[in-house]
Each structure stands twice: as C-alpha cells, then as structure tokens.
Length: 232
Image (cartoon, rainbow, N blue to C red; front, side, top):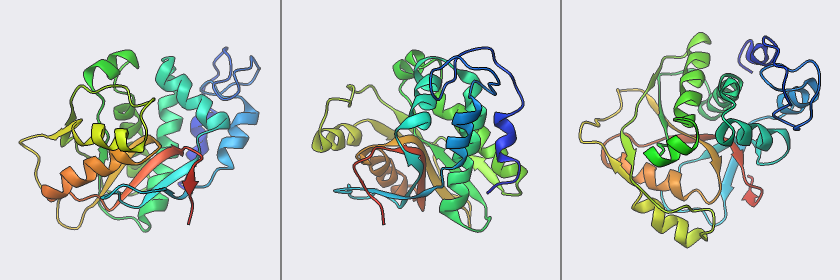
C-alpha cells in the first residue's frame, strides 16, 4: 500500500449524499461515508483479462469489479460532476499502478483520451484529472513519473450498445497518434490508464498504436472491471 493513501478520504467534510451508496449520512469525507470508505479500502488490485482478449491488449490490473461503492463513486465523478472525488480515486488508481508495475521505477502514464464531446458531457477531462492525482501520489511515494498524451481521440459512436466485435472495430478507428509523439525514455515503463475495462478493445487499440512509436505499454491499470472477466 502507498503511504497515506486513505487520508484523502478523511480530510474534507461535505454535507451531501454519499457517492458510494447514495444515502444522506453524517461524517462524509470527499463525499464518501465511513461504510463506503471501509468497503473501498478493502479492495485489492489484481490482474483481470477479458474473454476473449483482443490482440495487443497488455496485462491489465484493476482495483475491483464494477459494482457497489466503486461503481457508484465512478458514476458520481464521471456523470454527475463530483470533482472532489478525483483526488481519492486518483490515489486508488496509483495503488493499482504500483501493484501492476512492482518495484518503483521511472513511469510514463498514458491516459486514454476523451473526445471533446465526451469531455464536455462529463464536466471536463475526467481521466486527465485522475491521472494527475495518480502521478502526484506516486511521486510523493518516491516514483519518477511523467504524464504523456501521445494519442488523441476522434469522434465515434457510443459503444454501450455494441458487442465485442463492434467495440473492437470502433476502437481501431477512434484514435490517432500525435505527430510529435516520440519513444519512451530509456528504462521507463509505459502504463496505460483508464477508469473501466469492459472488452479491452480500447486499451488494445491504443497499445497497438503506441507500439509503432516506441511507446509500447507494459501494463494497463484501471479502477474497475466489468464482472465478465477471467481472473488468473
């Protein structure tokens, strides 16, 4: 565990409903009640793998399944503008990165980009905020971290109703490598970041694009995995 991880959930009182259980309760910290903090702190990052796994998907680690307080907190953050959750969720993402990578080493964090339309609908670049807090947490723990944005997103249809094949086809056309993108620094580990993994198509598509530019991701780190997973 990274030192001081859970102080982020106990330093600000917000008189509002809990982001984890949607109940109005006293003692909220960053919008999370004590019971949901307990549930979240009990989660431990582990490997996850879609079945079938798309070609090019790097090894993936997730904090937990997409359900319970974790799901509700992510929805509150992404869909309802609860920006105060970026700090604790970013700290949780740092925990996943640390578990996925192992001993501290230089890191390049690459968040999955949002389209401009998605960023507007979600009150800004939600994953960019998480990545910045993740990097700060890792840096405070002694890691050498830089954030890279070598990929941009192009307009694409909503993938919620698509099957695995449809998601894969959409993902392949959904991203472009920026012309200025270069290889990772010597000795650095490239980590792809996302909030949720479903089929893995998005992470696989970006990984294939980055590999051509010398930025091949070693691992991917996400907060939640949908339940239809194979867990080694």
